[in-house]
Image (tube, rainbow, N blue to C red; front, side, top):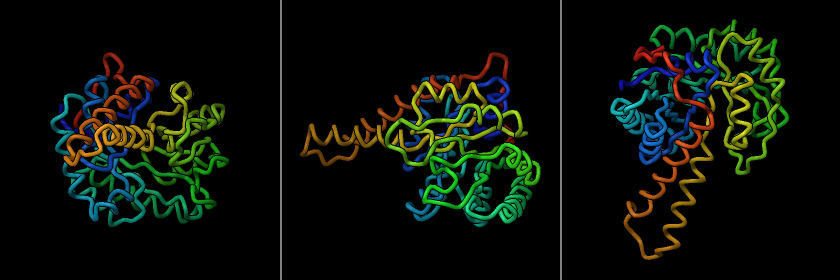
Length: 290
């Protein structure tokens, strides 16, 4: 199955009320685990590389090239996406490397500046055949738009999508980034209102804090792209701890990274089932960027 653009996964999912899981990857083991889990589920998936991960590695290219290679070799459609980019230079690098989509995050800017900056990025990316996600935010707290009490206004969100031309919009409906517990309370009525008002697929950030049942309910209410990071990191770290606790003299990283990779793959397969991510019968996923 060839590498695909994120839009070719998200569009049919939105049409058929299914979720698309977008998993943030930090290292090669994450990449391998996500692809393995997606193949086991028989579902398409998005590999996401965040700006924070780029900063951790020192540059985008090594992990991005590994993710692209894994996507090309996968037996299910896999897209590679740049997540939470805040600079035009990083977006340009992602486009040059061949990533099919980017999330440009101007959510800390006021509305007018967010629109202007995002519209410029959209123009450049669309000219290169690259799909763009954005975020309509508000300043406040370290979580910004995803402080638990933040909410996106449907009318403003619709105006924002029309003004910027973005292909998908991340909205605030009750989640927060980096939650270790699964007790986020989603506003399902707001999700439905946003879905009715916004002319683009909706994206749920901070999804690791949402119980499984509510993830499925969020998709049914109108969410399409579901971003998950912390939940995979929890599974990974718990497996590493368990392996080292069981064998304190272990020094070969493969002995503990292997079980951690397997744990993440299991979590990916499970979550893809929760989101009903298997492509609808008769739908097609093409290898074009958008």
